[in-house]
Image 1 (tube, helix red, strand yellow):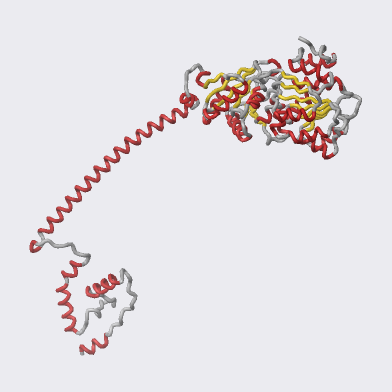
Image 2 (cartoon, rainbow, N blue to C red):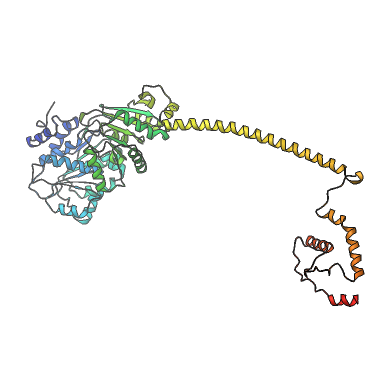
Length: 527
């Protein structure tokens, strides 16, 4: 196996590589380094985690002119994270070269700070397309003397939609530059871009199938949407990863899962496009320093994460295509280390999983949560496994309560029915007794029910007539009788007249003033 010295790398950089534990080149480095050192254009196709970065950084550092105060190398990346990682790799290699400077240029960072750094002698610029075009428009970056142009993760730039911006940047560079294009996949658009802007490039492909690394074990676990969180928590507790990346499809699902894992006491954080650059850098620093074990992220972070010690990758949401799947699980098993990639899928996700297998020509081991526990369970048992004991007790209590309610309801209905029967019997008995009393009335004839006051009216008629005749003989009438105290007293006939008026007026009250008594006329009549 050749070493870096045989590939044209100087002892200064060889020692730096040994300090970080890199002794032998990877296959992509072994094949790419001689081509780049020879000054030829290169198209390198290899999966993520194979060491593509050193494949173009080392030749640039060997051939760059430290004394020249101009931008000699431009490295374009699709994401800020990848730009920062490449910048860190370059800084590690040039820390003993005081005359060399590298600058990361990306969105979300203070433009004024970048402008101050650009005023120094910068030889290498690593940046994202958007911010590079911003500086080109301001006139703060001059690419007219660039000798080396690198397009890293070109297929991801195509996926994000940066292809037009990349072409604008390319047109700002001289035509005699050396161009290197690296990509995990090679869509037709990328091939067209290469044919347009590269000069007889050498094509280097490490693996034909472009599948995941062989040292990454892959498992697909069937679950249901409602049980995904509980399944993931159980997997994390079972495997206990040192560092793990959990991929979700959207930023909203990332935040929701982050809240759930944090509520369960896991050391985790989230990474997605809505975070500020300062926040993203803090999150990545915490993850690299192992202050957090779980990083929940969107596909934006899939291409740029190169963190040592990532042992597990969880696809909480299944990727939409084979390329995204390869890049996701490529976060683990890097630099020859072993890793585990677990994909959660539902029944409706099965066609996507089959398509990924067909495209990559692989067979993913399919299990469910019960098999991981040594049990032969189906989807119904999986749902029961993720239920907590509290939910089980609650369900049994509800069932018992329903039974008690049904029994008590039956007893209540029976009791109410017996009460109604007893009330009906009592009412019938009382009614019969009433008929018997009516038969014993005067003349032995049944008497019909009378209205209120009717019996008093008929019973006092004769007596009232006698009193009226006696008063007429004395010269007074029934309405002019007063008591000794001067209070007017109504006769029963007047009461009946008023009752009749109230009945006719439907309860209205008469407001007439009482008539004055003509006492004098009565006395004259008596005289």
